[in-house]
Image (tube, rainbow, N blue to C red; front, top):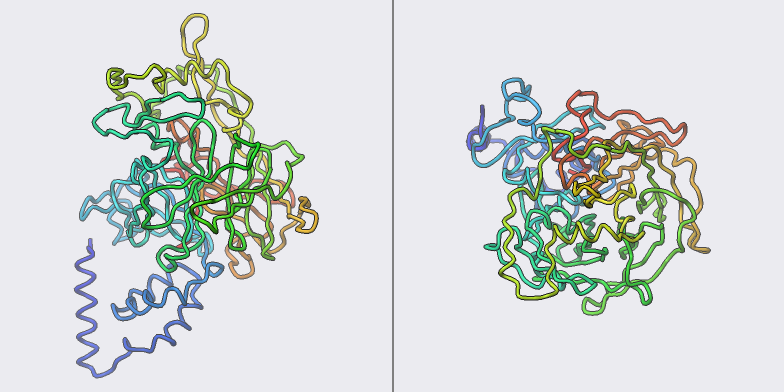
Amino acid sequence: MRGKQGRAEEEEEEEEEEAEEGYAWSELPGELLALVDQRLIKLRHRIRFRAVCKRWRKQLAEMQPILFNQSSLSPLLMLPYCGSSSNSSDCEDADCGCGSQEQGWQCRLFLDMAGNQYHHIDFAQGFEKIYCRGSAFGWLFMLQHIPLLLNPLTGKQIPLPPISSFPDMLEYNPERVGHEYLVQYPNGWKIGAGKRYLESMYMERVVMSADPATSKDDCIILAIRNNSNTRLAFCKPGADKWTLIPNPDGHPSICFRNTVFWRNQFYAVDTKGKVLCCDLSNDDAPRMSFLAAEFDIVTHTFYLLVGPADELMMVTRSYGYERNDNADDEDEDYVDDDEDYVYNDDYVDDENYVDDDQHREVDNRDVSDDDRQLDPLGIVYLTDLDSDGEEESFRPKNYWTTGFMVYRLNEDTHQWEHVRDIGDFAFFLGFNAPICRSTKDHPGFKSNCIYFTDDHSSGHRRRRFGGHDMGIYNLRNGSVESILSSNLYKHTLIWPPPLWILP
């Protein structure tokens, strides 16, 4: 199996041979390389083009801001680690390195549906247990104490401000196992939250205004923060803290569902379909205002995306689910994130302190409608005690997407107009920043369809189910086609959950 060092040595030998033979094809002018690169649509062609020699790779990297064209890139479906899905001896890629621990890398599968091909790409180790809560411009948002942006193709990492920099974080002590964070809730309670629990759900739905690698000064990162009620927060690469955006006056509690960057501003939609515009022109005084009224349709979740004609579009997603009537069913895939917590109440001398797990049990006895809307299926992921003192489960046994509907914003009336056909375009939805692609420019995708992955984060957190709800929805006839035929992806638990990413 050839390693990275071996490939570098081969490149150096090729360049030496070239110099001896007296021709300098590796020194082609950058303008010519740019013309070629702009015509390469498929990922494998871009990778091979850059692998010709070190000079070409360096020139193309330096010209990336000029070459980069979002609309020319085909989305890839990032799948679980290759080593977790097949034995390394069965891998067809000789350079894959499946299951290899060498140099701290593992192989992960990327499905190029436009080219009908799998790519086995080295992926930095240590991230298989970290929750990914968004992707944009080819970067993954990895949620941990110090969140970071990770480019899965290059391995480059950009650290972001720590979770403890949020205003509601009163204290962080990594030695207090099980209660590392002390959190101030809106109702005044101080709650001890475990590291593994909080770093699985505190932030999600991350979008960016620009690629931090090519436009660092213009890059703003927006995330939905979860803590009793949701809030929007933003930061810039290199900042030391996250900044919360105040909700509009008279609306202290808004349950945000998704966000998008459109015409130099961020927009967010809540669980009732109300759209808000974020004004971040002043970092010290960010504000929000309502753009469109509450949506007059009952659905489970909403997405915002930029449509083919640079218009703001809304997509609704509906689910069906099977209730789990037996919470004690054995499940070999189930991982209890709280099982290794060590609870120590001595470190807090405050009558308002509430243990996080105890709070979840007590708080579930009086759950408001807004709290229930935090989950797209309307299911509360808390536990309560029945009359016999046994825990009662609200988790579904399974769920699946039943349909989508598409709407376009009328900018004159600020009303949503139903769109029955998106023509020769395809949408890509999930944990990623929503993507719209022309099927004429990307013939490997089906027109008038929505490619979706499972972004039901409440289910992912417990790792009892999730990741399985993905497919291709046809807007014309309402049918759903499977993306993958492998039996591996027919289970109700796929970890890490697949998601769309731009190369």
